[in-house]
Image (cartoon, rainbow, N blue to C red):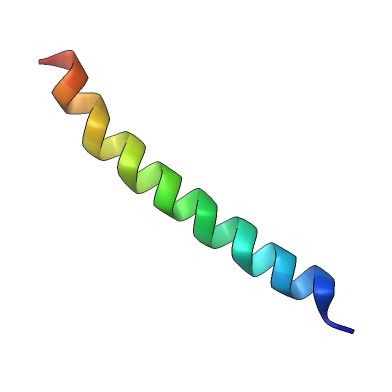
Length: 31
């Protein structure tokens, strides 16, 4: 079973998406 690997991939993808969204929204909120 490669569940840990899959979970890590999903976690990394979610983190990257969250970071992208956060960085995109942050400047808007500052303005």
